Image 1 (tube, rainbow, N blue to C red):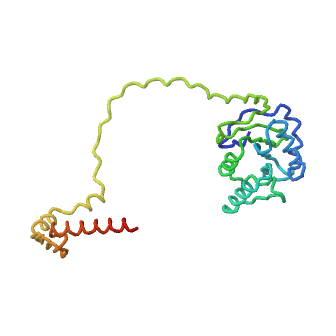
Image 2: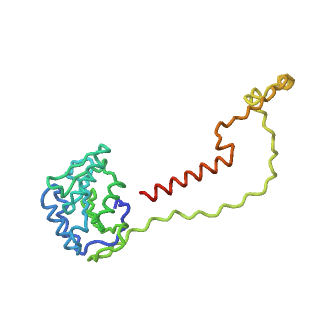
Length: 249
């Protein structure tokens, strides 16, 4: 699989995957929606729990593949998806009843689209067609749901193990060589220019330092802050007013 969905994890494939080859024949036909419900029935999932993703070339002469998302009619999900692609200026085509949409693969926003699907659908059925016409069908589970629906799955085919790099022989330890002598680097030309000469520093130190004039203390004009007795009277009067307002309110 060249497309690795984020926020999803593969859990299996369909038991009779060869029966769904017609889904990739014409992704723009109404039979794609009918095939979506057939795939949900074959998987044992409710249509509201499943989103179908088909990635193929619409015609052999197409340069890029096409990503088609098929799902049960959901106005909220369709509006969120259309707004996302409209904001980023990416092409996105919906059919009239907004049950499926088509996206060119170069314009497909993977992380954002997978995040929307993972928040809405617990199951993703991914069908990908290679250049030679072979199909790869995988069922993915969303990591956003704690409980997954009971599905009729077949185990995934084991992938070919990646070739291990050739083992390299341990390098022989080089013979100990005498330590190299550390030579002091000459000073940079810019550093010497930045340091003022000694004569300039002595002339600056000889100049008299200006005296620091202390600031005048600010005079507080509030009698409350200067007289504790007056401050206590003001606080008591304020509390009396609060009690009076509380009794008459």
